[in-house]
Image 1 (tube, helix red, strand yellow):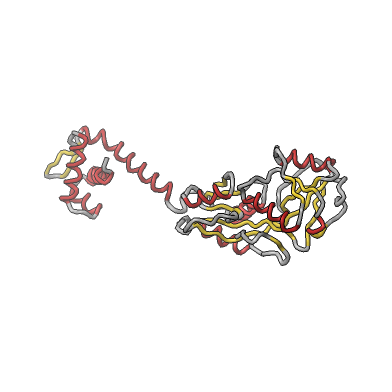
Image 2: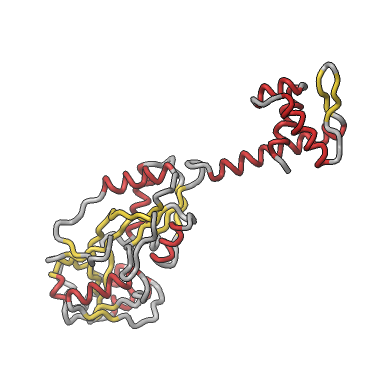
Length: 307
């Protein structure tokens, strides 16, 4: 159905005259007559009775009027649903307990009136594809993964370098150390069952191990974070990597210890990814907020491919 014809019908019904409706719609009276006539033909009924005093609705016109108004209201709602700034800003994060989610929480606290829709996609490649295809507005990921590059018009900016910590149980040889040089981890078994090929985090940890000669055990299966922490807590020779701002909690009697890594400090490189043509006004606010908060560490290591 031609919504312009429906809009013209409602304008005539409201004004009671074709001439006044034409003035309201800034079109000619002839154009109003043609639109109404076309609508009448498509419906197979007369909508108005014309007289010297103006135009009055027929019984069919009276029946159609509330539905015509509902059609126009539905059109306005449909337009508003995608109008920049009228919908939530959709942002992908790698996991709800990791640093990117914390960055978005801080943004929400700073701009509580901006509505966010936080999603978690399987990996960085899926997130970049979703940005490219307009399914999400932005993603916080380590990009581009080695052997790949960002699609045309997809942009990224480094927004956070999160230091890594070594997590060990109370019986581990490094349990009483507050910090150790990264090179001192050589010979220690670091268990990372969540490292998966084809993911950005898998590429990061494999490059980290190669750079410093570390023993990275990726044998799984990975049953989630809590079972991993429980296993590390009970072991005297297993350790694992966690981000400095990873939101972790465990029973006090597990005795897990965080050990700070230095000389250099491995950092996980988080970048904001977005499409250059995205008009959402909140995206510009998010970019400015994250850029202002970014402070690269003086002594940090990250792979050359990241951001």
